[in-house]
Length: 293
Length: 303
Image 1 (tube, rainbow over the protein chains, first blue to last red):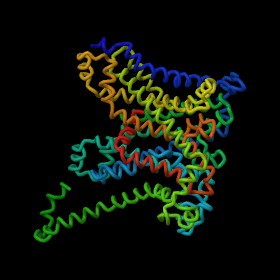
Image 2 (cartoon, each protein chain N blue to C red; image 1 turned 90 degrees about the vertical axis):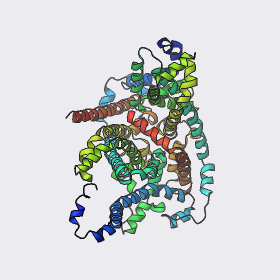
Image 3 (cartoon, chains in turn purple, cyan; image 1 turned 30 degrees about the vertical axis):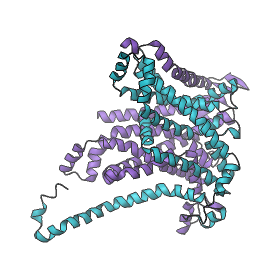
Image 4 (cartoon, rainbow over the protein chains, first blue to last red; image 1 turned 120 degrees about the vertical axis):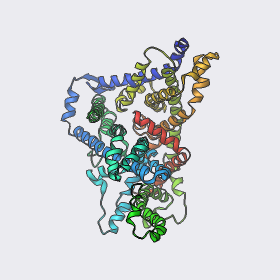
C-alpha cells in the first residue's frame, strides 16, 4: 500500500508545478532581493556593491524613519482597534443576539470583501470639503462648527485611514473571534452563572481567559496585515500631506519604481520583512509567557 | 435567572396578584433589558450601511442634485448618465475587462496547482514531505515587497512587461503557499481508507487524485477559490508595479487614477465606478456569504 502512495512519478507530477513556481518566483527572488539590498543602482545604470551603506542610509534618512513611524503607528492603533471592536461584536453576537445574529454578522462582514481603493475613495468623499462637501462636514456645520479639511493634516489623514480600516475589517475580526467564543463549552458558562457570576464577571474571568489563544492569533494576524498597509494610505491621500503619511510599503514602492533605486528599495523591503518578523515573535513570546504563568 | 426563582415566593407578600401579572412584567422587563442591545445594533447598522447607501444613491444623482441634496435622499430621477460616463470616458470599462482577464486564470491556476500539491503533501507518503510543507509555509510570512524588484527585473529581461502575464504569474505565486497549506489540511481530514479502498480497486494514485481527491475537495476548492478571487481582484500593489501603460491597468489602478482625475470636481462618474464594484461584489456575497466568511476566517488563523 505504502509503495503505491510513495509513487515518485505521481508526487513529481502533482507537486512539481507548485514547487517549481514557488522556488523560482518566490524563494529565489527573496534571496535575490536580500542580496540587492547591499548594492546601489538599477538595471540600466548597473549595480555597485556598497556593503552596509544602504542600511546606514536608511537609519539616517528622515523620510525612511517617518515611514517606519507611520507603518508601526498605524499597525498598533489599527490592531488594537479592530481586535477590540471585533471582540465586542463577537460578544454581542454570542451573548446579546444569540441565534438571531446571522443577518447582522453577514451585513457587518460585507465591507471586508470590498476593494480598499474603493473604500478609500468613499471615505475621501465622506470627509471632503469645498465644492463637494461630504456628510462629515455637513454634520459639523449642522452643529454650528466650521468645515474641517480633514485630509490637509497628517493626523486627520491618519485618523481617517484608521476609521476606514476599522469600518472595513471589524466584521471580519468579529467572525474570527465569534468562532472562538462558540468553542467555549456551555457547561462552563452555565456553572459560572450558577456560582453567581454576573455578566461582566463572566466575561472577565471565564470568557476572556478561554478565548486568549484566538485573541492572540487575531492580534498576530492583524499586526502582520496592517504593517503592510499600502492601498488605504495611497488611495486616501497619496501618502500626504507631502509624504507625512507614506508607510514603509509606499516608500519602498516609490524608491524602487519611481526613482529606480533598486538597491535601496530592496533594503527598505528587507526592513519591512524584519519588522513583521520581530512583531510576530514578540507577541508570540509574550503570549507564551502569559499562558505559562 | 435560575438563582432568583427560589427566593421570590418568600419575598412576595401577596402572591395572588403579582403572580398573575408576573409573566407580562417579566416580558416587559426583559424587553427593557434588551433595549440597549437593539439600540446598539441599530447604530451598528447605520454605521455599516450608511456610507455604502450614500455612495450608491449618489452615483444616480446629477452633479447639481448631489450638491443641493446631499445627505440621504433618493435621486429625483434614477439617471444612469454617470455610469455611461464612467464606462465610456476614460478606461473604466477596459479596467474591468483587464481585471477579469487577470483574475480568472490566476485563481484557476492557484487552486489547481495548490490542490495537487496539497494531495502530494498529505495523501502521498514519502520522506521529507513534512519539511517541504514547512518550506512552503515559510512563504506565507514574506511580504510581497520582498519579491517585486527581482520579478520586475526578470519580467523586463524576458520582455513580457507589455502584457498582463506578469500579473497572472505573480498572483499565482503569491496565492500558492496558503492554498497549498490549506488544501493539505483539508486532505488530512479525509479518512485515508477512502484512498486505500480505491487503490485496492485498482486505481493508481494519480487516477485517485482526479477521480476521488479532486471531487471530494469541491467545497474546499470553491471556498479557497473565493478567498483568492477577492485577494487578486482587490490587489493594488502588484497591479501598480507591473502596469506599464494605462490601457493595461486593472480596475483598482484605474480607480486610483480616477480618484485623482475626478476627486474634487465631479463626483458622479467616480461614484458610479466605485458603485459598480460594490454592487457586483454584493451580488456575489449574497449568494456565497457562508463560504466566503468561512474561507477568509480559515485563511487568517493559519497565516
